[in-house]
Length: 181
Image 1: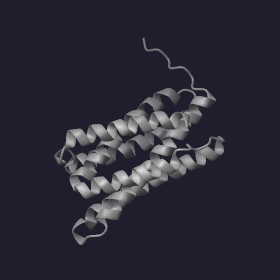
Image 2: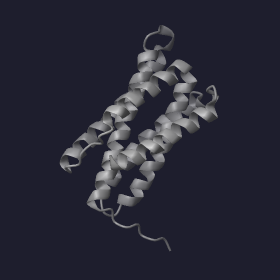
Image 3: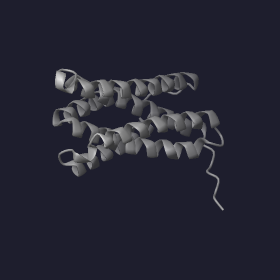
């Protein structure tokens, strides 16, 4: 018999919203950094266009979290300026490493985020069904981004295993910091 997860309290919901807002903010920054590199050359404009489409989906998520923060009177993370620079920088660096590295970045980030959303869906499904449904939709979008990245050769990136582990670790650290700050 499965145990019912405890109902998240207002402080926990605030943590969830703050982290998710920061994550979507960071995703937009990563895609913008990658587009800044790929959009400069005719040879890589197609990937820049694909990244712009994924950025637009992430921007919709970010807009939804902007609204949720306002509605629920939750402050965004104080780390936003740092996450902006870090996300944009990660986007630029992985794009400079090549298309496969940019896709490896997307895969690593989306792997962390989809698991994060999955746990939040479980945590909120009873007490916050509308929020849980939004998380489920956002998770589907993130899975589509991840699957696209894999199909485009993420696993063929130079030093893929190291790159993936480093980005995954960075995402996990950012989540822990953002929960509190």
